[in-house]
Image 1 (cartoon, helix red, strand yellow):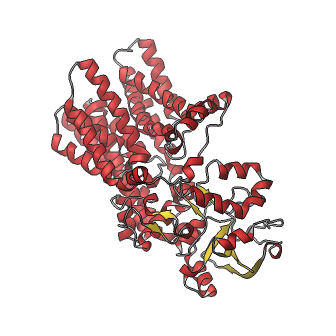
Image 2 (cartoon, helix red, strand yellow):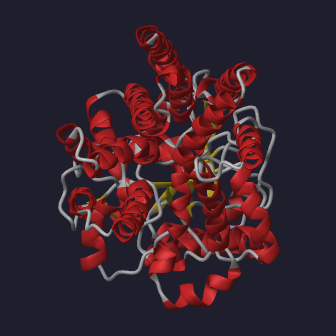
Image 3 (cartoon, one colour):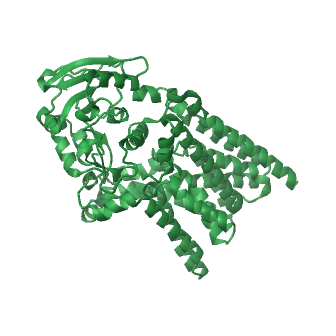
Length: 559
């Protein structure tokens, strides 16, 4: 029977890996025709990798800047460390292939890590291989934020390794794991929260067992030191740079108590856009059914992990929601670190917690009665079905493809028409992301970045001050955050995706072109026509359009 169970589990593993291969195959088959997430991806990170590699500042000093962005005032330290695996992929491969490889690597190790964790420490019964495999597969298929690499998806693998170290088992491979993971994940956007939570676990473990647990403590410290070494740029900026950045004006704790309570349940059921789990449709009801079974059987002691994960999942949503509660404002004003560092991101632990909870819920159903085993399998398969539409080729099928978004041929025509070296003039965009111009090698006054000089933000604001005066929402969006240092226009709002088929026209543009020229601005790339261009000292040079591009670009020159 044991042999049959192992054979079946191997079949399940082969099927799961085949599904993962099919999941990522479109990036390599479709190439630039592949559809890819735009938000916090094509509009930023993907372009940053290309700009960073092209800038020849990949290994630049701590004082180096990126000349192509915001008049060279963007610090090299604001972009990813050269030791991150994703940066290497974009250095070695064409962007779409690099992106596809990142998806493949992240999802494979997500599957492997969750499977190993469940097999050894959670779902240990041999006959429950299907639960282990399908829970690991569903975790690996979640619509994660790709630029985080294994920041979220690698947590189960890291936890498996740390638990091994604690139990003095598979020590060598576990230390290799925690040594290599930092090179394919981020500290600030993932593992800071995991390691600090693990530190609390270590402290509780010491109190509970009355043993120092030095192996676990030093392994946590060891992984933290590797991250700090990799993140030496950000560390250097924090220690040696005294210049204020746009993070100094990051004020988002403005929800009242009722909004905060609603946000608790929104985050609990729907999640955050960077760690979506598709929890609410299948996993939530399954976990609640399992909870009812536990209560009815009074098996609290036996299912302590299940109960604890239920509680932790909800409390993380409470923590996330209350981070944006306006009651925090006095404290955030007093301690700058509470503005410059986003401590709400402990919610990044939720995907791992939710899918371990899913596995435990299926196990409880499986054990309850024989006839419930079929129900458990059905629920597991339904979660796979729920995740299928989240594949980028399906989810973003109505958005521009990679090639349509970056419109390389169209921008090559624009640069040829301008007829000057790109470093000799500056552009800004209206109605489209500045990352597109950056990806195509143009030097931009606008950008999307969370770490640039506050003085530049204030200088750039002067250009669109008349537009922000018309729209309090846009003014608040820019003034209280400013990560998107864009030319905001009242008539367009926060829409930067106007296709070549759009009928929108800007009729009442009011920009401070004197401020624009003082910053070196010469051209504006607009995705929509500007009716009162002359009133803004702008002259239409040419309209660019191509079959391969999503945009119709109106090139205006300052006169």
